[in-house]
Length: 311
Image 1 (cartoon, rainbow, N blue to C red):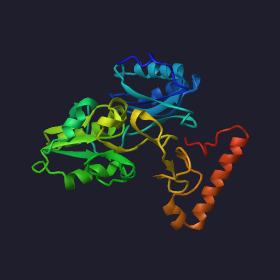
Image 2: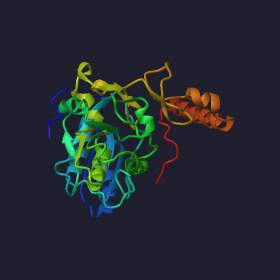
Image 3: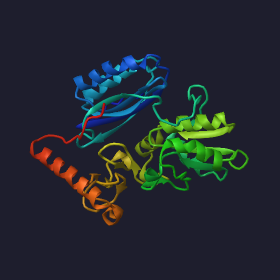
Image 4: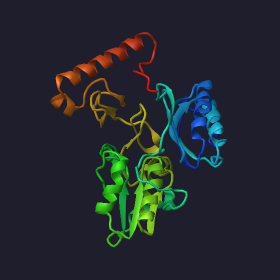
């Protein structure tokens, strides 16, 4: 694990993490983990399941370090790795630790990345791999993520959720036609399951980008990059680019998909995207406008508008 405290600490540290490990009593881990985050003002979302932990947290350098130390103390998590970036402001509204059946939902029983997984490829070696003519490069993310950025020449499965990915593989990827498959995702977790799925299906030469797109954008200079566009992230930054700098995309106030508004540096939009502006019905536009009014009222009171709390 590398030392992440040598440089001047940013105002807000964002840490994306996951670990596949068997947590037999994962339900009992929820409350202590929630409390550990709240004690140091860390916010974000963490998912716990029998197969491990996944999520993104943000806070001060000291706060994030405290929570990461707590997670490293969980069964099988001593070698936890994570990807860090900086944010100008807190990108989350609250802290949520949720219990799930899977830490990334594929919906296929028996897929265990601890048993069979693809070959990890370091960001420094990724360009060479995906440039080979006998390698098919597959983006395992969803269609709206692919739309704002991906690797040059990557295949888009056009999925709306990761649950659709196994069906796409069965229909579109044939071992005889694609003897070598390289896959990637935002932080690496979807590829853990995606490569495990292909190994279970009999694919022998399966590769995935170690650390995901985030690690690639952190390590590979823009002038040497095969990445085109921005990388969608699941927080208020919406997208990041090379060097993990916050990007220009916003989320539509109605459909919640990313779009370029040309009016701000990114974040959650206070107006619809062009498609929703033309096509959304009056009810949806009214609801979005009311949500924005509540956000503005919360700002005047010096509060964050977080909407109804989910249990």
